[in-house]
Length: 289
Image: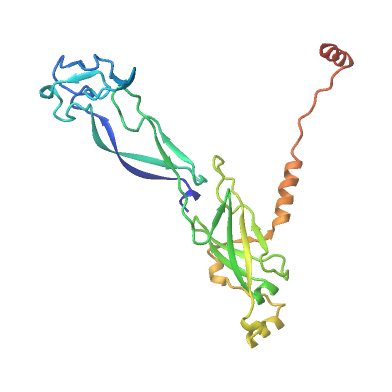
C-alpha cells in the first residue's frame, strides 16, 4: 500500500563515526602519534616458520597497531574514543520512497556508512521489501484480485465495491449486461494498477479473477429460483447511497485490452527513410567493394 504513492520514512541506525574530540586522530596531545616499533610503520609483520629443510614466510596484519602503522601511548590516547579514532553514534536517515517502487529496489545513501581510519566511507543501502496485501497481488505494474460470485450474479450480472490502495472507492460494473461469467474468468479495469516508476501519471491495470460459487448439494433455493426467473432485472450489491462516494469503473475483456495496446503501438509513426540518389547508391556500392 505504501508503494502506491510517494512517502518518506525515518530510519535509525548505529554506525561508527569519526571522534569529534580528537578529530579522528586518536589523541589530543601534539606529536603523540609514532610509527609502530613492531612493524616499523608498515602495518604488517613477517612471520617465519621452519618446515624441516624449508623456511616459509607469510605476512600478517600487525597485532600491535592493528595494521595502522602508528601507535599512541596509553597515557596520550583520546579519552573519548580511547585512541580508536571512531565512536559509535546513532544516525537518522530519511528514506524517500518513490511511488511505484518494486520489491528489491534500493535507496542508496552515499558515504553514510561506517567510518574507518585510513579508509573511504562506504554507502548505506536500504532495500525495499514489499509486504503481502490481504486483497491485492502485485505483478509488475499490474494488480490482481479475486472476487467470489454467486451463480445468480454470474448469470445475470452484478456490481460490487472495491476499496483501492489509495483509499478510493470503486464501483465495479459487469459489462456487457447479460454476459455470463464462468469460473476462472478474468476481467481487467484499465489504469487502476500500480503507478509506473519514473512516470508521473501512468499506471498498470487491475485484473479481477472470478470464482463462481455453486449452491450446496447443487440445489437452488426458492429465493435463487425466483432470482433466475427475473434475470431481466440485474441484482446490484452497491446501493445508491454508496455510489455517491465511489468512482464507477467497468470491466473489459483481457484480450480486448491487450489488442488495444498492440493497436496503439502499431499506429505509432515509423521513422522516415531518406531517399538516396542513384549517384549516392553507386558511391556506397563502390565503397563496399
